[in-house]
Image 1 (tube, rainbow, N blue to C red):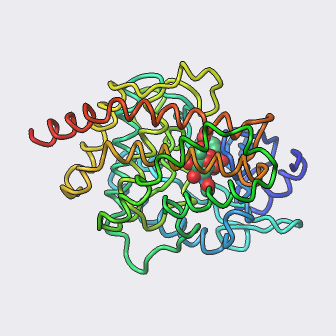
Image 2 (cartoon, protein in one colour):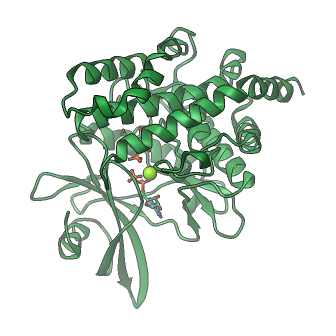
Amino acid sequence: MSNDCNIGTVAGKFQVCGEFIFATPCGSGHINDTWCATFTQVGKPVRVILQRINHKIFRNPVALMENIERVTAHLATQESGHPDRQRRALRLVPARDGRSWSVDAEGYYWRAYGFIEGARTYDVVESSEQAYQAAKAFGRFQQLLADLPVPRLHDTIPDFHHTAKRFAALEQAIAADAAGRAILAQSEIAFALARKPITSVLLDANLPERVTHNDTKFNNVMLDDLTGEGICVIDLDTVMPGLALYDFGDMVRTATSPAAEDERDLSKVTMQFPMFEALLRGYLASAGAFLTKDEVSYLAFSGKLITFEMGIRFLADYLAGDTYYKVHRDGHNLDRCRTQFKLVASIEQQESEMNRLVMTLMSR
Ligand code: ADP
Ligand code: GN1
Ligand code: MG
């Protein structure tokens, strides 16, 4: 990992006026690396976000950045009438050569964003109001991008939410048992194999393709420090064509449980119904007008599906020897898999009630 000195070199590649002072790592993402860099401009501190793209996972960073250029420009136009427009869409800071990215000596692609002040992200949801605000912001994000001009965005990772292919990858990982860990994950493997039929449900449902975020973790929306409003959706690497339900499902996965994604005490992991209700109300407040009846009918299911999908992705990576997600301790991916499966079980217990709530809210 680069130190502050190298970060200073990287920072110098972007069109930031002022003198670089220092940078600190920020965020808890599993793929890219993020720093907050502070500059002084006429004696005043100015902050910029610098991100190093993991090109082993995002194989075509130039296409990815083209997507982000188009998406951020469109959002900026859509928000141009808002008094707080500067904080409501990510703003790319161009590199000195005018491109939206810069390549370092090791071949890593970097980008810079203006820092959104007076707002922050949370790894774990603290209140139903936060869940409501996050869901409303992600729904609004989909709504604002509904009229993104052609061409179709690049698929930055093909088949990203193709759950059936994710399941096939798990089956391969079990068969290969590359790290000799299958013996340590027998109950998780059994849990996964028993649920294969759910993996094709959305794929077979003939739902409309939309521009979606595809990584709507609760910590990918910035909530205003004063008002609590979800003001800006961040982490745009996977914005591409997808199903609206992938986004709603990932909100259920990350904003209904009071436990961290890697919590070891599974008794803390549970789908809290009031959080689901808040997500539903928030999402319908901004996306309700364009969702089809079919999409609405799968809202509760999508929470179960995307949580299951994440569980099998973590399990497959554990079995493969931790080659995809950053890990910070032994068994980290297995711990993550366990929280996901515990949450799936909790959703299964409440799914009928969740569906009833969807129908009640829609019939009003
Ligand atoms: P990752 O893919 O690693 O999750 P994110 O784009 O989500 O990367 O950024 C990581 C963290 O950096 C976020 O959780 C947020 O706290 C902070 N961050 C990202 N972009 C901005 C921004 N424009 N302004 C302020 N903070 C930001
Ligand atoms: C990864 O890096 P991060 O935390 O934004 C992953 C998402 C998962 C998430 C699980 C490109 O996102 O799909 O939902 O971890 N991103 C990629 O926490 O695989
Ligand atoms: Mg993120």
